[in-house]
Image 1 (spheres, rainbow, N blue to C red):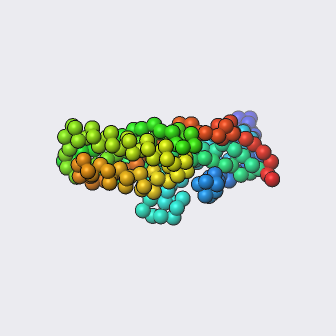
Image 2 (tube, rainbow, N blue to C red; image 1 turned 120 degrees about the vertical axis):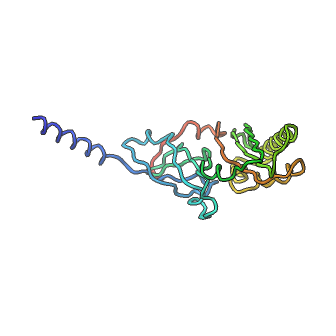
Image 3 (tube, rainbow, N blue to C red; image 1 turned 90 degrees about the vertical axis):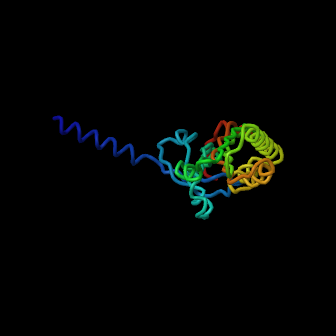
Length: 211
């Protein structure tokens, strides 16, 4: 009897799995509308809010970007196609550890900004000096980096700001200005997190039939 019941349970699980639809996940058009993966569900409403992960290397084809992981959050469904907005990024622990050396200063900056088109993003940056900086120099570097990040957000739209974070424009700008205060070895925009989206429909989500 126990064996028969167990078999019926197994069949039920398999049937439920077969009912699931595999949704293709694509980024929004401003991020290229590229395919980033699949996610299964037997109800499209269950797909909303899921987060897809990919590497910047896979997204761009650039092998030098392997250390960055990019996250996209699904906000809409059209047929079997899920649309995902940029949600944030981080950098592998192994890469960050490889950049830190003794007798250098590590200055961390965490800044919440609002882009020109009203997206709110938390940006985390690490500045590494060539040798040890004193307290005032570290404070001045932190202030200058925060100023650059905030000004960049004011001047750029959400997609432009994300590109500046991921492709080096922000890091280069911070390094160029901060080396006037103290010699800089490297600047890493190691993490970001979208705190709020500007468009109402992206916050609420939508489900519609294939057009």
